Amino acid sequence: MKFLKLSLASLITSSALFAGTYNVDASHSNVGFTVKHMMITNVSGKFNDVAGNFEYDEKSNMLKSLSGEIIVASINTADEKRDAHLKAEELFDAAKFPKIDFKATKIEENAVYGDITIKGVTKNIKLELENGGAITDPWGKQRAGFELVGKINRKDFGITWNKVLETGGVAVGEEIKLQIAIEGILAK
Image (cartoon, rainbow, N blue to C red; front, side, top):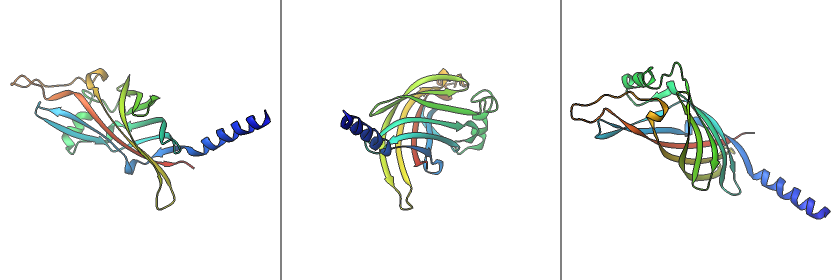
């Protein structure tokens, strides 16, 4: 019996050595999106100010937890006038709702489910997961990374502004495609 307890304690301790908490490295991460413009093309953008952390098990190469936040005012679509409009009250209302939050609620091998909060509205969404793995970089830091892709409907979060075109379409599509690449550094 003593041997069994010792073996279990050893197993628990050794698996804990392989799992770690990583802080998001914003300079090597990208939270991007695309949305249909004038019904004919996609406009892309990203958020420059992102933070968060995740737990990653290096032994099993599995993401175990994830939480993060985005500063809405850091939106960047390569057009200052459009960015100012996106931050305005009729769209993201960055003054009243300065952050977008995400917290994973369930993680599978190829999918992450989580609660995303935009403009005070929280919805559970599914994102496809592509695991990048973990390495030790040339400077001795342990890094792990992954990519997430998915879709949300902006109207579900109260982002409803639009303009009807003379041709019958609308200026901005409802579906937002998310493309997220996250790299983190093991917290010491």
